[in-house]
Length: 387
Image (cartoon, rainbow, N blue to C red; front, side, top):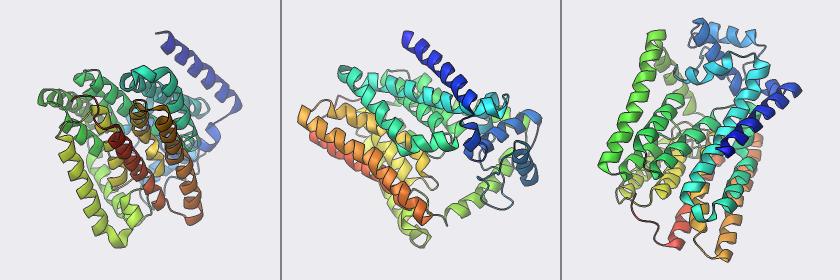
């Protein structure tokens, strides 16, 4: 309780300080946050986020250059349900909403990761939780969140919370968190959610699925009541975005192999997902499945960028948990390797992406994290009993 109060007070102080200095309102005005903020404002005023002229006008109204609009005549390609997350911030002027957005995501990410670390590595929690938070704070996707204001912190917080609740034996609450994640941004971790469902007992999986479905249906019902035609409008936009994604060098296997080898990318993705699901059916240690499936999901998703890799903090947490059971020399070697894989290589690949104009090589980040976790788990041998 005291830790929660301390985190809340620290977040409030940070919000006030950032608002006074005007950061990150400056960079956020033109980047991801602007589109998300505009979505919330349009939901409050009855505007249509899928109508291109109205969407552009809403950006102009806040003085935004709308750098996230990359396709002509294509407005928002988020589900309308995503706007529910942004509404509380859209009630504030941008100068206050921008720092609130960043501080909220940072606080939720830290709190959820600390809670997960306490569950999966209780013996070394005090030591390794600081290491984990430090690695995440130094990571490239964390700084992209700070610079652009994407949804990465919310996705990480919801995924880590769902994992923690499952480990703690609370499938209904875990399902609610998973449902909130799917309502917010469905595609990055959809594969991971399927794998986690497979590893659970039938009773737990049904509770998770029922709870998640309840959250999704409630959000869908409310969104349809507010704007009955939005699903058709969204699907129209999504089709154009999918065609655009197939031509871009994004940070997934599809970007790595390129449009000319799309058939191979699909073959690799399907093979990895099938292998993941069959392995999950053997019901290994639940956190290990979560760490592996997050990496597989981020690598195989048809549309994704390096800022989505913030969720690899879950994989990093599991690597630290497994390493904590090994000898000190092995643990230090794994920690150094993790720092290279999770911090140094992503920054290097991002620098290359800036010079090349594409993030395709950043697809190697979830792949290398997957390999590292597998190697560490194999070195450990058996993990705790079935979940």
